[in-house]
Length: 78
Image (cartoon, rainbow, N blue to C red; front, top):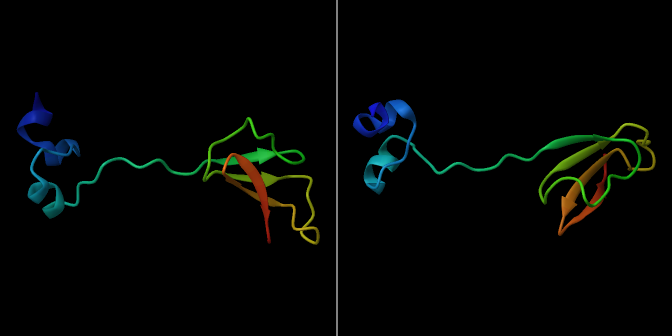
């Protein structure tokens, strides 16, 4: 009941966009996951936008950090 009386205190958005904007209330957004990996991560793991840190990779080979894009893990330059 308290969230209906005071949406700001509860961090909830209201039906009034002016109220939401004034108090900086925004819809929830998903943050990327950071996944440890041995070898190249499986495409079945994670979601687009996630990062994987390969624990057995080499900096010289640029296979330490992966970013998931379009359902596949892509090595990024480290």
